[in-house]
Length: 231
Image 1 (cartoon, rainbow, N blue to C red):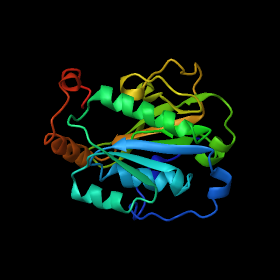
Image 2 (cartoon, rainbow, N blue to C red):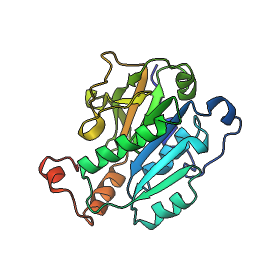
Image 3 (cartoon, rainbow, N blue to C red):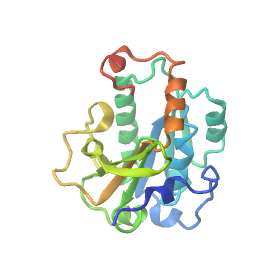
């Protein structure tokens, strides 16, 4: 059965990180996880809380696209893993995003057997068992996840909806030649894996609205705007 996303994304004190001892020896060099985000004060703490249950802090990486939001910067200052601050003028410059993520994946594959990349509003949860256990037993070159949208309705209730748009190839031991949005790549397996991607962008209507307002302060890539990639 599918995991209940509400139990993952709406815990009390989700911003409080607790180090999980005993992961270093078994997980060392097996897999790294990374994300790229900007001013993500809502999702980045959720991302950290979830993935820190399955990865040692030294195997977690955040590529920060020049965040200016004070709350986000404060969170990043205490992030338990690695933070790299990147400067780039345009928001949603998908060519820059694509090349940055590809370069990071290639770099990490030089030190890890597998690399998992997700956006900060994406949680990868196996149909059965834990993510850590799945990765420890992984053998295929890459894995394509099963996409679901998690959406808050006007009554404040969460709904989970199947969405093939999020069937991405994100866990891999080979370099991936993603296209814009990381939705497809030449190395994409034909079969879906028993890994579920919960896309949380609309889990909070108020936060989604607030995030869109914050984005208006930045200069958007005109190509992204023309193709609605910035929505």
